[in-house]
Amino acid sequence: MSMLKSLGKVALGAILAMGLTLPVAHAQEFQMRRAENLDELLRLVRDRALFESEVNREREREFTQRRDQQQQLLEDARRTRTQEERRSERLEATFQENERLIGQLQEQLDSRLGTLRELFGVLQQVAGDTVGVFNGSIISAQFPGRSDEIQALAQRMGQSTRLASIEEIEGLWIALQTQMTETGKVVRFPATVIEVDGERRETNVVRVGDFNLVADGGYVNFNPDTQSILALPRQPSSRFANTVGRLESASAGDIVQFAIDPTRGSLLSLLIQGKTIPERVDDGGAVGYTIIALGIIGVLIAIWRFIDLMLISTKVGAQMKNPESPNTNNPLGRVLKVYQDNKHVGVETLELKLGEAILGETPKLSRGLGLVQVISVVSPLMGLLGTVIGMILTFQAITLFGTGDPQTMAGGISTALMTTVLGLVVAIPTVLLHAILSTRAKSITHVLEEQSAGMIAEAAERSGQSLG
Image (tube, rainbow, N blue to C red; front, side, top):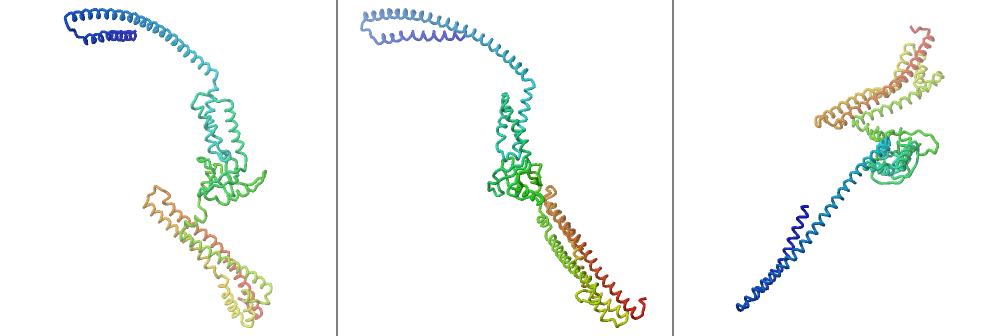
């Protein structure tokens, strides 16, 4: 109502303004005219009075006409307002009815869905978990991009209230079934392998279930972040690497031994980080290499002496079967030669001669054994020296860098432990070799002494004397 009154006031002001334009214009016309005498002035006054009277009547007539129009506009506005108010009431009633219907329909939807809503909640969770499983699975190396559709399904279900269709549920089920089926297969497929230097090469890759990938005689790794196959910087120990060749050369239906990684590459990454034997030996430093050199020298001497004693033992055995014909190529033959050359002397003199001959043969039999024994004793001592050096290095690292980073102490500790191991590795076999060689040399010496005692006894019998 207030708006309609304002509109009426504006219209009335406009009408009044339009009515005032005509008198103003005619007044200007009268001002331009000039009276030349009194009669003319009287006539002008009368004309002006008549003109103003006519103007006023015209103005009243226009005002009355416009007032009737404003009244009609006011009535039209009131009628329009009444219609809009009724329409507003109808719309308000319709809105309330729609709200009531929406509530009833929502209750009906919730009632009909029941546990089905929980099913779709579980479906959304399974779809999200499946995406993570597929992205981290080695099978994705053979089937790239297979998780895109499932990820889109999980996003749609999480961002809207739209329910999954039967086709989408079946697609998720088929994807899970495919994952389980492929986990139990060993297949060969073409793929791109990225080398350590970044070079790409096309080759055939063998996938062992969901555990390992091998290519060109070695293990390769699958990177879940980039969804790519990467060559390893180095292969694990031969105990595991040798199984790759048997797998790649196997035919369909063959059963071969193969080392698998149930962690999908985590254990394999740890294995290749372990140091090889040359790298561990290098941790021993100069002391470690010295111990190894001594061990090699000791083993070579032991092998030489073992072969030599075996030949001597064989010749001595042959000589014992033919004592009447002494051969100077063996110790027993040389002792028998001394006996035959001194049969005419006395028993005491013969005993001294044979004893001297045996003493002359003993150094030849025990030659090199002392050096092997020295090496067996020195090696652990050098290992202990390396241990002390390694601990000194460790404490120096602790002094400079503290104990916050274990890697700063790893070098010294590795040196200490490796030199100790090398010393024991050299000492143990050299002690055993020295014992074996000493036993072999003593057995030959015992044969010489036994034969010498027999020859002395025989000479004593010939001379009619007793050994006592």
